[in-house]
Each structure stands twice: as structure tokens, then as C-alpha cells.
Image (cartoon, rainbow, N blue to C red):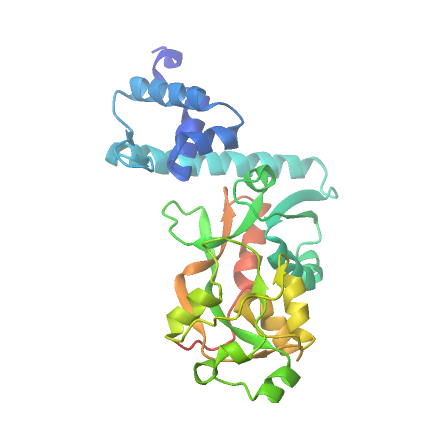
Length: 308
């Protein structure tokens, strides 16, 4: 049998895996550094070779048919093993060689969570050189090509390429002096128009702002116009720590500041279990990337009780 005439090309298989995993040919083309028509042609070639329809094109997000899912499961595992084997062979060339791994993270997460723990990560994996890339757009080229990436948003992974690091939990924070001066504890009992509130100048629907947060706790939205808007979240938290007002705190990012006594947490707390910080990695079982993934899963955890 002439296998070259019956077996799908490697390019068509990698294109198919990327399309199913990412849900669109455009995203797959971006990741594989080619064009959407080229991806479409590879998928058609694969379906012609197999003799079956492998993609359900009826919805907005492309998904695998029943037969396509069976093929995808095998291809994804095989590509992961190939990637892992190649990296392992590269490592065997020089056991003393340090491996560079890129991690793309939102700038706030990089500054407030990762930076204080970077020495622990380096100590746990001394054979790896880490390249930390602060990015705030999911479609940034650096994010797409990073070995691992952290994102904030809705968790709806179906292909095993993502892990929920921690569900979103949001509560007001301020300095201890500010809380004592204004007698703050539970903000449902406070007229927020009488308190200085700190705002972010980021129109991103993924994040809660004061209006959404007040609506979720059943409180009236403060009517005072923002005096200052911050475009940098760590800078806004620093302002809160200096007693300049109330800020919304995400538990993942403010936990250490609370433990250090720079901020205090007020109530109520809003928790959205389907939103949070998400770790993405294409090959979770890779010999180099896999241990880093496990390190993140171990070290990101919640220690502040939730209150609905």
C-alpha cells in the first residue's frame, strides 16, 4: 500500500488539532503563522483523505463532529508526545543546559502575584530560565506563542488545554487607617457617596467595576463622579494602601498585601465560580512545561473565605 496517497499530511493534522482546540480557523492560522485560507485548504484535504466530515460548521465556534472528536483526541495526544520527546531529546544533548521557557501573564498578575514568588519558582525548577512577558491582550502575539500563559476571563475549556487557577473573588480593600477613620466593615451599611472610591480606567467587560459589584450585592451604585481613574492596577492598590480610598480587590492579587498588613479586606465578597485566572498550555505533559504547570496549580490557592 502506498501510504503517501492515503495518509493525511502532518500539516493537515496540526491544522485540524489547532482549529478544534481554538474554535476557529482564524485563530489556528494565527498560531501556526499561516493564513486562514491555507488552514481551510488543509482541513478540506484532511476530510477528503479520511472521507468524513470532521468539523461542525453550523455554529459560530467550530467544533468537532463525533468522528472528528475521535480523531482530535488521538492527534492531540500524539502531538503532545512528539513535542515532549523532542524537548527531552534536546535536553539530553547537554544535561547542564538551561532551558528557556516563556510565560505570558497579565501585568497586574505579574507584578502582584508572580514577582513575589519568582524566587520560589526558580528554586523549584533551577534548570529552567524563565522569560516573563507581561501582556494584557489575549490575542497578543507574545501570548499566542508563549509556552505557558495566564489569562483572566470565563472558564469554558473543553479540550484539556486550560486549568482554572483560582475562581474570581472580589471584595473592597483599603488601608487599616482608612477603614478605622470611616468605620468601615460591611459596605452594605455604608453610603458609598460619602467615601472616596478608586476606579480603574479600563473598559473590559471581563472585570467587575464598582457599578457591577454594587449591583451583585444589592446596593445602590455610588453617584459620585470618579476624581481619578487609574490605568495600572498595582498603582491603584498602592493608592489604597496609602489611605487614598477604597479599591476593589481580587483575592489572587491582594492576598499577600493583606497578609503583610498593607491592606484590609472588607465585606461583602462576590465570588463568580466561572470566572477567574486561567492557565493555558498547549502540551501539559511536556517534560519541561508540565512541571511548571503543576507548580502554578499548587501555589495559586484561596485562603480568604467567600461571602455571597
